[in-house]
Image (cartoon, rainbow, N blue to C red):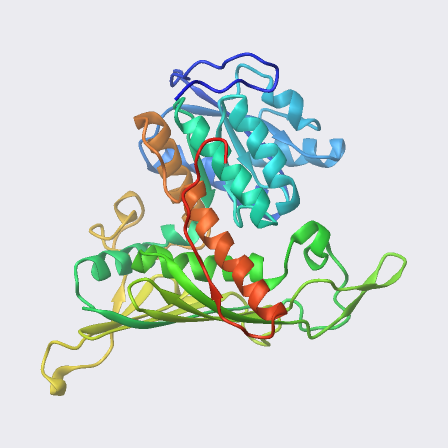
Length: 400
């Protein structure tokens, strides 16, 4: 494959890993804060390539400067394009809203920067496809990219994947995945960019169903072949700065997925589930065993072994914080639990190790695109009043 030309007509060279990786992060709100915490702490607990938190980028000069000082960044900037031109920047971490993902990620990859981007990959399937093609082309030059599905780095879910891969559940027949929150239950909660289709792409569907769907694919492998879905908006108008504004995305979504293995997965997500703060519940049922997980108790995994005599069966609680469990040998003595923020530390650790080792990290943009295709099919099915949408998995090729 010929080396692609960058936007200025030159041909970038395959990057080598410098002695110290310079990191730029774009966005400093909720996800920016979570990612900054991870960058600030990862080297204290894991052996990773040397890096520096060089620059934090945001639109408001005063606010981003204050955030940079608070979160440990050496400086701040308001123009992400100029940051991409800097030779001392090797990694770009994109925590900006979804409508900005495609433009920034593609430009960063073309500039030879390794890219980490928050989920979902993009607001539209077309944008996600363009990003994935750019990532595949950049990978040929040693430029790595990853999407931030941080729940893959929950030790209990990483352990669940190991148990499934070991055959402890046998043939997985069906899965229930529910991600429920309640931060929009009050109809007087103000309008935000997350409730506008032009900026958010979708509502609960892209925001939290993306996590649930990714977990199904992460835990089981394979691809989704059929989708049936429904979307609903319970509160259609919210208070805005100049009066009521229309909500143009969904408050809740439901989907039934068929995997190529024959497994059936039901997915339910809502930001209107009163009393549920951040509950990602997963139930995985096989012919030899079952697993239960709830993010609100993220250090626990329920496991039932159906191969033992019936008189001995029952779900047992695994407290996932032994040194033998994924990621846990870096943290505290047994019995001392970790929290939600540690998933981002694990994410940054894995990304840095992949860059240092010259290997492609996971989840890749291709994996993010697989989730995006399911999201698009749910929306298509909902618009068609619950018809089944057949999915294909045509590979991304250069020039497609």
